[in-house]
Image: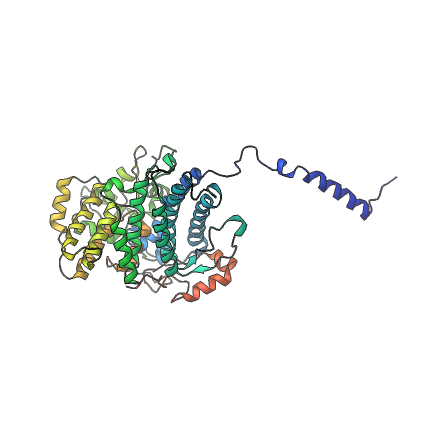
Length: 499
């Protein structure tokens, strides 16, 4: 006889099944190997690996805008064309993933240990590093989700508002001050989990002050009073005293796997065609007879075959219809950037940065400095930039170069142009920072490529927001876009971009 299940019988059966399945739900669904909470050390290491190398990524977008790299017609952004679904969406997601991971340090791993020796200094170091990431993000996009990003799991904002960049900068400066005050030699630090400074608290204190100096100078033309105050306070604290203090991430060789690859080496080997040297950069090095040129670039293939090696950079934003012979243009130095057995650290905040900022501050008479000191700081910046890997320029060659190029002449504005042009050279491989400094000061003077793109042939002034934000967070996205002088486009300027 066939049994027919009535709705009442089905309900009883489903209820019994549900009770049986949920009695030991937590025990059954808890992984015996996955940690309930990821240690703060793991979170910091991963955030450093991902966040620091990202600073040197994006040669074919940001690097081409700053005209140190030339990507031909293979990259839409290098042609002043938008590609929100690829470049912008990936970039946005990757950066906010970093923020989420760093937030886990304070929201989970070290929650409740803010005033204990085991948590206080670790949280301060994580906050200093997070501030570094936030500055890069707001410098690139402008107004972004900030106060409602990185919230605890029980208070997540799924559709976060966009904070104004001016407010973000004020908050970041204040956060740095609070974090520095929280650092203590008597506390437990990150040790080897901190791949930058190995938990060295005094070096993190110096890093924070140089980062604060950078933030003060970034807003020089937007809020001069706050800029001067910030710069003065930063230079009053301990700062880098030489290249030994440089913020650097150790990198792995191409034949190894312990740490990340150097971002420029990795990018070069993933697509040689996207990483040719730009004409503006090669010309600047050649014109100055810069001894770093042969360490950076390779003579063109065809000139080497002809027995008369020459360096020649490729123009930027040439347009998709332009046909080029890539063997007529310079790639990166093969011995330096394609050696499978050797590598060098990735630098992301340096003593040379400090020197060039001091030269600029001296021209302004800020922080107790005076214009007569600017030239000395300028020369110190050049020397420091030439001494680091992979250049390792001999002192005799550095002295000869400074003898030719180390004199600041003309008006204060002309001196600023000299300082910033040398700084642009020193920032090679640090695309986002070179791009920010060019926008801030207008130097070096760069001529846009001929392709009109979506900018009418102008160099973009910011990155556009992710396409996912336009769909998922439309109300807040539209409000932020309405605050931009030309909407969410390449031509809008961020708050501090006043030149």
